Image: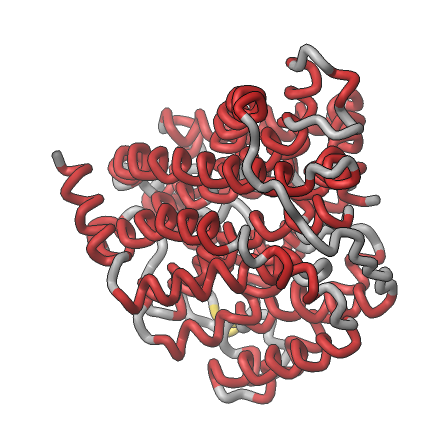
Length: 503
């Protein structure tokens, strides 16, 4: 009964005129940045973090940011299908068969399949969040300092395991993020540390400035270096309604993709991307027509699109229940909560039930808005691709600078943005993924605080982490994952899974 009353509270919160308006803005903006290659949900949310401070209502701001995230997953499929240019990395698999369907005159069916798969996956994922978030929150409330320390370690190890590219580089990025999290003041004593005599570093580095630099400015620099020609091949899309046979053939892939994405989305790392690639592999093996894959297979669109949307939404579960970000976007969502004065973690459901359940309910509303609005707007999205990037990037950079400055009215933050923008660009050139760095920066202070608290409570006895059952189980899982991912055969498979994304 509590579930229904909580959902009623959530829908009452999310269905206010203001929150529906912010949800609409979020999904439309998300679709737009999903359509435009080279921007991405992470960079956009990083740039919009300062605006959440101005909105005032934390529920409205988080609803808008969430809409941007899952809206981008939807928008990325549009250009993947129409012009073979994925707007989001998770849509790279959709382009394989979606573009071939478009060339065969079935662009409308491919787009409708992506929309239906996204809506079904989003709806099921929202139900799963509503079902599993409360028991996970109740369990998390029983965690002590030792359990939280081990949980942070699991989160960091999983971010390494699911990061594409070199495992050693991913570990290095996590360590760099942890070191950056130490800058400022000691979490226990308040003593200054690692500030190199600069009073500007007396407090912790500005999270918004680092995020905007790493994901906003760095992406702009990379796109300016190699802007691809955008040639719109599909001027008109017709025949959006799938046939009865199409519905029959898409049903199983949608359900399988939803199940796979829902599971992988919970894991720390880029679960939505991994889910899309894994779903394509499963559908190809499960199909009775494997020869169609790569030539316009409907299942090659339905499965991956369902998987990446389900993965995007279930990634909210660890963020809402444990305060652990499953990916960089969730780290930014935690940053938005902190800006609003909300402490992320299991107490959010009890102390801010309207935010907790309102955000969950808004996901279903947002998915409904996506399927209602975006199919009629396909022509508009494709026309936007004709806008040259050299026209877009000055506006984006100006918006970044104004937004970051408005948070603290501090010029120093602009230098931080510039520094981390250049650092992020060089990391990309060195094939070092910046996502583990951001996760390390977010989790570092939490890891240190709980580690030191656990040691104080145990009077300096480190065995407390292995004598407490839950903590020992989490540490064993972290070690097992790290050992497995370092095995040569597994490393080879990881490279094969993400080779499409690097191309």
